[in-house]
Length: 285
Length: 230
Image (spheres, each protein chain N blue to C red):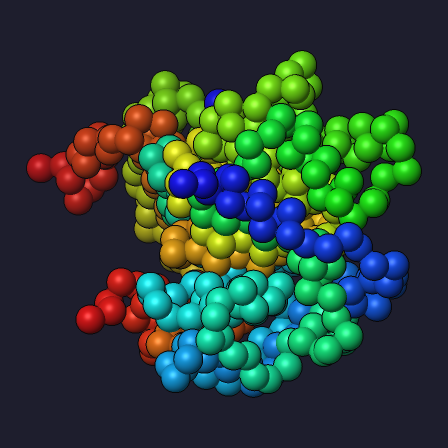
């Protein structure tokens, strides 16, 4: 029976070598700060006959954090997974509507989903480092996509990614140690370093701190605060307090619908919809 | 105290304290200028005090916005929570002190006709004491020192005594020369404003004590006034 890590690795192994063109053409010109990075319009998702998302429209700005909140089963993770087409891997899953990154439709036939998933990194609830060394964890995607011209450049990318993830000082003397020898919080930062190493423009996070203690959580939140200067970050969290702390925009989902989205400060001090107010004040029946 | 792991949280708290420090500085200056204006009958100086009050009000509005945001988005706990709530209350106290200083400044021309040097001196002395109280309590707030705050709190008795003395003196003056009644009434209001500022200082002292210790000072502060004496 393969472990989680080995399964993750084997999924990566089946990916074909990269093609010369980029996944979505506009990555050459990054959107200016404040502009829309990810645009979703009337997005619906079906698992077989069951509809999980109903006509969701939401703009997610670049260089900022958008939080998706709502009760279990409300569709927020489904929506998140649509942005890097992870739903493609689920049999019977169908996505309608338009999702665009920098104006380009990600579901267009010409888009290479593999490259898309490098451009749109993802961090999961349970840290999933590969069963490899710390160095090789970070270097893996870089090697796979041919992003470094030699060992020296690879070393630089690995070091820079670990720095940006706030992990370098803790691991610089033991890069050959197994990724899985790190603590939960460190593993999560390693996973973030791995995602950053392939120069994504967008980072998706699905409850990244649920498995972590308060100190590790605070360190990840500080990291998110720093990363938002350069990335569009979209985070699903079942902790409203976390959404309040880390995000600039919050979207509230309920029963597959987007109920309300707005500036985080406004959502948490003066939401427009009573359903939002009920949810965040704990008055949900 | 160590910094928050999430640095922007520490920054938020620092910015809030910055607003309060500015309010405190403005209130102190307004008060000492208002008292000087009364003592030296300086109408021009009085005008500047009145003109400064909107700045204090604007800072209070800004501080409240920050506080609302802090409470909603950071969920402060323990000392951070007490600090945020105290800031809310102290901002309100400082805004009132600003208003009272403005009110004193507005009466400079109305007490202009008073010839009794001793009454005016009495107001100046009381003003000096209250100005010192305000400075001491704001220093205590900034340094988070409960002993200093407690001293301000107990010394308010002295402010009350000044007020009582001044009240009797001005009333005597009114009896002696009824033509002075109108101007003297305004002087009494000035004295009363000073006494109220003294009370606001003790409120700030109570907030500092609560912020640092998490406990309230006893409700019966030593008081001296005609209402309390038997």
